Image (tube, rainbow, N blue to C red):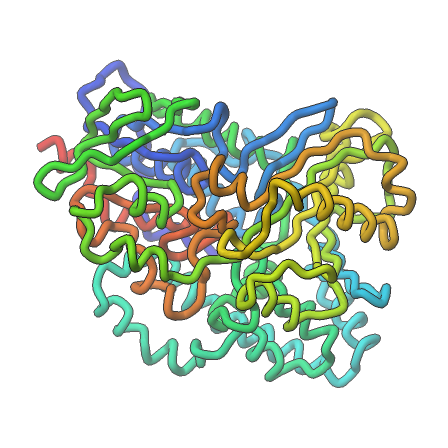
Length: 513
């Protein structure tokens, strides 16, 4: 399938002509970098402004003690979206990036010690399902068909729409109603699969984009088909190697990525974005401004309220936000070769734990976590004979009454003990490097509103037209990409949000004229 066949692939070859219209992109996450590449291909001279000292945003890379830690996204799906960006620049993704398929995609370990290796091997998957409940084999196959139906609508048809008007949504309502989009992912899974363990295996995916499986619209079950159809990958050198590759594409277009440069305000005249004012006081002019900063943060802190009708301070405050994230990056002075690249360690509760995180804003002792071991695939991420890791725990965002300045270390020790008791024996004796990231860091370092890990929660009332639009509702020539706008979080989502720009941003030639 060539999902990109219907879009122009105009390439921009570098020249010394600086008369091209100027576009500013705020933030260098995957969405911002993808936006810059697309704008460059459409004839703009692009300046990407990044607050941090290196590009990547949530995909920042930490290097310490000989270990390399990808700060955030580590799971690559829908690689054709990356191939499309490289194609816009006349290159092949494989020229710069070495993607390796994962097998299994994830190992899901249950609290009682049982595990399920979730992979793209149909026969292995069915054999494992039979071990849990033979009656669910046919149900799983039916679930995959349901997932594909939602992929065809939610990804292929809705994923690249701008949803500027309510009519854009109304046109798809009959299909969304037919697919029962009002039902949650967990409800859809449960319709086909009865075993409680298997229900968790097939429904946990929305947590990877900040959604509660019990409340996020069932459209997000499309992730199951996406993974089965196109695979799950990791990049050699870590996800940061993809960021580096995208920056090189931007520079090859004659554009720039400027780090350690914080934007203080989007400047507006007569209802049109005209550029940005930096924290240093300097002002930069542009014909187009694209914000890859958190959508809520963009409107709450970068756009004066007098210019906002739809996204007032009150509406931003009362919106529902995704969970927060607690991430412990650590290196061990030994290898644990029986642990795969991606693992999910589930606690004894499923729905109750998610209720604590999303509804009660309570930090639970019986947490679940995602464990990342990149050295299972790429030994260069750690010193010889060592492993690099991170343990990521979904936690409440900053509306919760949690003092992370004092509670971070006790919570880290609880994670360490859980891992030592399960998959990493004698872990405390082998820690060689350590650092933490809490929801406070997401707020202060990444400018994430309420420290949410994935911006607005992707429930049905905050999806598509109900989400902050890719083209600002109130301000001309201001556009949004990233997790907080349509279609949502995750690498495929934020790259797709940049693809929407092809539909709504005027070509540079039209702006220049």
